[in-house]
Image (cartoon, rainbow over all chains, first blue to last red; front, side, top):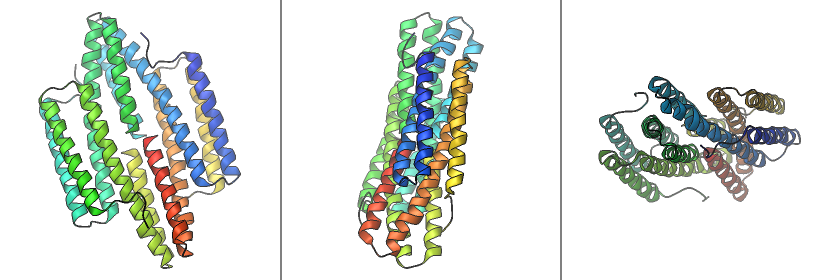
Length: 94
Length: 94
Length: 94
Length: 94
């Protein structure tokens, strides 16, 4: 099953880039960059992090939930759906 | 399977209350209520709508995805996971 | 001073349309519409509400804050900035 | 004028901590941490970034907008309000 899910290498590459963006934010603050430009960069980092999160959620639902359901383990599937829903709620409000 | 999912009556009751809140917003604007108070009410409506959305997502993942997976229909399960992920992405960015 | 700010009539027209969208959501639930389609509509309503909120914030900053500052009332201006920031924080997390 | 605004050192300290959290995320992915735990950490980083953004917005409105308005430069004040509103809109949707 494939979809939004990324490979481990892709997740790591994205997070490496995000780490670089956060260091860039430090440089911007250090050099007294106009705050609106810093805000634009923060929105970019937030968006990049959300895309990683969406990939992980896709993986969780597509593998953890679906595998438990396919194995006929309804209780475990329900537990994993609950975890997914809590994670979505946290993400939406973060 | 139960969780965040609500009954049809619960969804309708919530949406009825949200409709009343939106009418309340119109009254606030009409009476020139201080904009910060209107903003507080908008945040409340947004939060209430998100809770309905989270309930629906829980239902989709816990029923549609899990049922397709339990029935061994991997292709259909994957399709439904994709739909769920797209809906989450839209919700997070709305 | 103009910008994102809308006229009272524009706010009311938008909220009237949002009220109709919320009634549409009730119909969708009542008719057992596929939950992914309901979620798409909820994201649309959330987005519409956010646009109203952004208009009000623009108004608050462009009128309340700027007028207090222009009148030399620094304390009042600061109070209004605090209110704006709290409203933004609530909105971002709702 | 004080409020949510932080000092340069406080912004840098926060961003340094966020950088550490992003490196922590890489470690979690590398060690195949359960995706729900990774998602919790991403929500924490997003929240921390948003708080930095809210501090910067507070600063922009409380200094840039208010100073322009206090100096009687309405055109410049309006321009800065527009920038603030655009930044808020981007942040809300990121």
